[in-house]
Length: 50
Image (cartoon, rainbow, N blue to C red; front, side, top):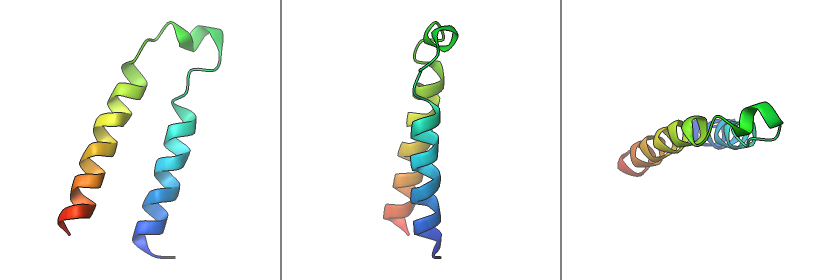
């Protein structure tokens, strides 16, 4: 398995994990998904540069 395939799988898992499904996590707002979006942008930038 290549590094890019592993990163794509990891990103998909994180996307699913940050969706606010339970009632208590809906009150968190955009905190977890906003932080993940920032991480995703950084990872995509690093993949494009290399």
